[in-house]
Image (cartoon, rainbow, N blue to C red; front, side, top):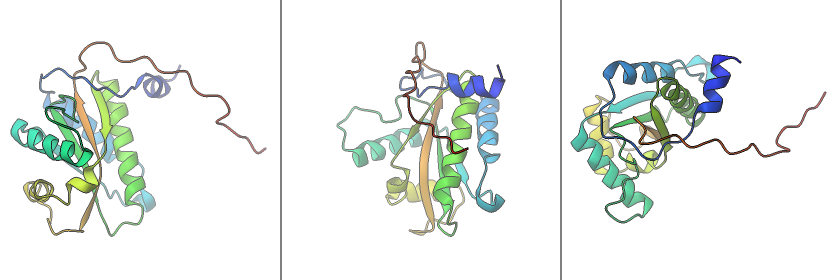
Length: 178
């Protein structure tokens, strides 16, 4: 079988991570995959903010938990030591699609490198908080409200235990018009 198709079929959402930090080379490889994602008119609009500082990551987790309505000590980043936040300037009409492709590429790359990943929502709401604005500032981006839209978080780390097995694919989801 084709290595790309194998990676697509093997990738699963991981929701339990070991605390070990991911090597920078692997983080960079995952980010590079995101940078090569398709984008509307080839604009390469997504910006990836890599959060590897544990204190800042934990503060992001608390905000994400509060936005999601969970109680402490729940961690919506499932213990993953790396959080990649994908943001896109609101000037791009295809920002949600471009950012989604970026996160999809990163998740596939993570799986191919033996890492676990999971798409975590609430990045949009996070940018409207103090810590979201702080994250933009730390990344060297304008922190004015409304300039960027948070598309999603891609969490990374080494999976704790075996990855889940893929559920059988539902029938009837393909239609040909020939």
